[in-house]
Length: 509
Image (cartoon, rainbow, N blue to C red; front, side, top):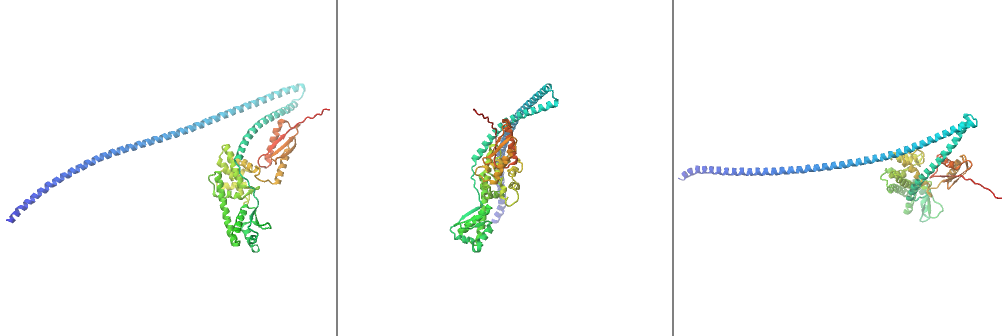
């Protein structure tokens, strides 16, 4: 019975379980489909939202790009307007210059017309005088022409001399006034102390006993010291001092530093001498480099080749006419910069050229040639500008100038060299220059006496009043100045003063 129920219940359970799973599965499927639909709908909504956000973001970016393009266009438009304004300003300046040139041309045409009228007047007078002479004196045409030409030449020469005098006086007055203002302003702003260098240095000793140590056994120490430094040690009877002698100031400085270190150390023997001399050489090299860097820093020069900096520093130990060359070069640079600023030239380039104009003196004892030529070669080697190179090469008039900067350097160099107390001059050269000035002036016709005064900076000339009148004085002074400039070398400038004096003497009895 039990098996029967089992056989009957088992199929019924299987069928019931089948229908149960079917209904349950269909329910879950529907739920899944509904869930899927919800997910799809949600995804569609999110996609729509994202789409709208992307569209809005794209519109914002497009608006920003549009604004940037508009801003760029506006900046370009402003730049174009500025360029147009600059072009208009230049056109205005050119028009103004053209107007000035036209005025000058008109003035020249007027002067030409005046000259033509004067020529015509002279021609008419000559013709009238010719006819009158032929009628009254019964002269030949050639004779009358000769007389009239001499008369006309005298009148024209006198008239030209008179005009030349007036023009020259006005030009001299204007040029001298402006030049004096610029140069005095430059000199007032520049106050560089000048030091006179000698060929010896004196080193104090703590006592006279150390002199024996310096000399060493059989003079061994002093010989080694002199051979290493290239100087001469003078140990004489002067108490507690040793003199170092050398024409090379760099070697003299090395010797001074090394000797002071030896005296302070107290151990004076060949090995120690060699060691301290090498230390002194390194110290002087450092001082040279630091001096070059400090110099361009003080002058406001932005950059320079390292080798040129070393050569500038070496000028600290170089003298010319007993004047320190580095101090002179600094002064020339400052004066040149001031003058350049006054006439609207490149101030930094003028300072650079002024500082480097004597750079050849740093090597002229080592290489053959003039310091001007050597300096120009050095500056060209280290890629300095053509104006700076020419300033070094032409500052003594050996070659022509190629720029206003070169002329400024020549003038600044003369100012620095001729300033009172700047340098000493050789007596023989001074006497020779005085004699040359007086000789040149005495060669001119009508000169009675001439005197070079104020250390050769003024030449006073007394003329014969019967041969030179007041009008011809200016022409005579001009001719003498031109000849002095062509034949005499001198620092600064020379004033030529021509004096004409007439006296009438009578006695009452």
